[in-house]
Length: 371
Image 1: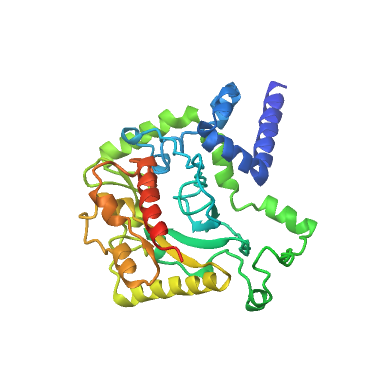
Image 2 (image 1 turned 30 degrees about the horizontal axis):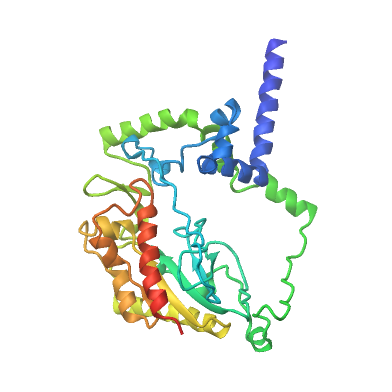
């Protein structure tokens, strides 16, 4: 009888876990609480034993690269970013700056960062957005922001950005004084298709791992395993590399010469021309829909700043900036000359000092290049 009860209990728990892993909306909620609770003080105060043991995770608390390899010597708590709110007494400029960017600027408060603009609107290139509808009563400017590695494969036709057609532009629906056309809705899926997506969820294995093993209780074991592999076999997790001076973790794709995004992969002039041509195509589209000017800002890879002597550096960022006609926010030399650390040592992104340096450099260029 005890065996039957135990068996039924295990079966029940297994079914609950399986059902939870199949429910993607539940998984998304758990992910938010696991990875971003440290950014929300209220969330921390409300934490119960359940949340502390089963929800909270160290995967991103100490940097995305630490969360891949769990090497304890690179366990540095991330600093909060400065919020660039509106300055008291600032004058209205009637200008708005749009930024189409990536994870370097995602979730940052930049509304009052730039003196020449009343507001900053950020659009994340990693997710579907658009079409961009501009306010006809404002002067609208755009900045295209990229991490250096993402320049390699940029093509506006291959992004998830929804764009206006030529007929839309001619009829003026890209401005807010004319109602925008209703976005097309995908046809409803059948019950069979919805069940098929749930039962054969391609992320099922990953979701189960997140529920069962991605929590604070497992961190010491992950660190012990990582330390053992590194000390005995000089091995670390895929996706991460230790810098030549051993002071920081680096994103593997920015180093691996087999990868298009590597800072050490040779780039001939034809490859450079292709990148510049794609930037020009994007610039021409954005100018056509009403932006007065389009700027380019490329954030250097951490390896380009702190470990560029590791192998022959391709200097992609500087070479693109020299070839393009777009007004640029130059950053590489400023980062190289700065004696402070401008990138997290356990994350692939810049730290608050790096962001502040970019804001200061961007302010100079934007103010000097207004129509």
